Amino acid sequence: MTLPHTSGTLTASIDTGNAGTPPDGSIPDGATTAAAGWFGGGRPVVLQVIPSLVTGGAERGCVDMAAALMRAGGTALVASGGGPMARELERYKAEHITLPLASKNPFTIWRNAAKLEEIIRTRGVDIIHARSRAPAWSAWIAARRTGIPFVTTFHAPYGFKGKLKRRYNSVMGRGDRVIAVSRFVADHVAANYGVGPDRLRTIPRGVDTLNLDPDRVSQERLIKLARDWRLPEDQRIVLLPGRLTRWKGQLDLIEAIALLKRDDVRAVLVGSDQGRTEYRAELVARIRALGLEGQVTIADHCNDMAAAYLLSDVVVSASSRPEAFGRVIVEAQAMGKPVIVTNHGAVEETVVDGETGLVVPPNDPATMAAAIGEALNLDALQRRALAADARRFVLANYTRERMCDSTLAVYAELLHLRATTGMAAYRKARS
Image (cartoon, rainbow, N blue to C red):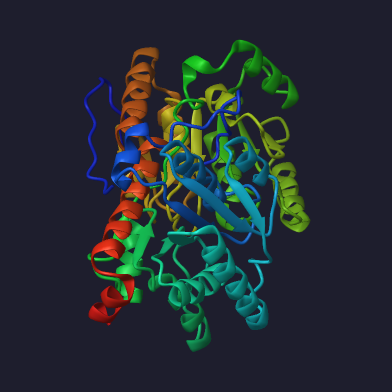
């Protein structure tokens, strides 16, 4: 478990977020204008369906794809229950349609299917793309009635507690193309939904490497954030971003800080409790019990994560459950920071152990403390080498442009299939 002393070239065999949008409101670099050529000069209309547009990974991907499609010369429609991110769609000239797609009520699902069918027919929709189960049922019904391609994206594995849950989940495996956000998720989909390589596509999530660039974060932003968090100048910062929920591992990091026994280290837990006030109170109580009031800060949601990463010396993901992708860890590496991450989920894809970060067992504060100490002890030359390698790794594998271009290629593949074979014939042949 040793970080590198010299820089090297990193590669990863990866099959083809949420740092915010460009300050000027321009369409983000999610697809090159040459992507329009994939559609044979046509202007495809794609309807994405998602429960809501609150902040989150699925929502970020939805908005990024809408912007990319507009950039590629298509038309982007998004149907959801609404939320703060709907305003971004307006900036990109994409259209939001409000529907109660978060509801699991069977009657509402059928009503939503009828409304989606109407949208498909009146707006000339070419593809419908579902990013969650409840809206996927409505989208699947509407796609069958109208004969257009149906795409799903698995943003995470789903549990299988009972036959009813398995049946409810099954719609996500019915896509004409099924997208998984990591190899970890793709393996789950292949094993549990019977989706073969002819339909399954692994497209890792992409992060905003334009805004997540150390050279673009001003000193003023760093000073403001340090003041907001009341951080002393003489402490090294260990950052754990993530909503305050037990499986994100905040308690393990608190224990690790206690075991580290270094007064010059402060952990910052960044994330909203989302109403989990009892867990927040438990964290505060544990901090006090260990005498760490001067070494652990609980901060609410941060609107400048690029500055937060740059302000930090180490970034930690202490999840006790497997992460489907692990956006935080990829974002931190884009900012050139060493990462400490627990060993499950998509970690083997998103971190080069011993080169861009350290992988530790879950629920093991002692090993985590040792890893944090090792990362903090890197000298200036070692930190520069790691920063360069980490950012190079992300730029090679996890850019928003790569994610969007790969998804546009899936759309183009289905449009060609529809034009040459027809969806009804294709579905009959594979059934």
